[in-house]
Length: 109
Image 1: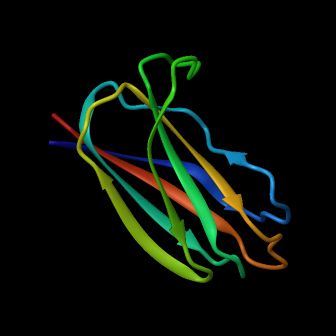
Image 2: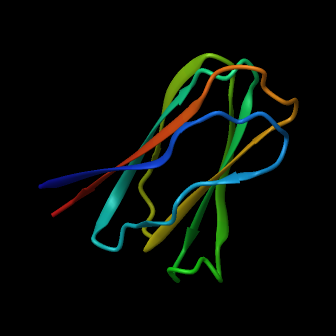
């Protein structure tokens, strides 16, 4: 069994209410994915989890969306298969401090 870790968002200091897109993560070789979210922002962040069969995300679909409260760490899992994924992080109010880090862990054979 093979585990791969990729940083999708690395210590991003979000200071506005715009959507911040992660890198596009190639996960063609795996099925189960976990996201570790470290939100040290002083505001709640909404994370939208997108999947796609194309590397340019031209046919992206929203798999799920969830909030991570200020200064909270959490894990989210997805067991459905899609070849590529991306996260969009958005805050309703502009954070004044902290960062957001999201690491993806993929499990394959």
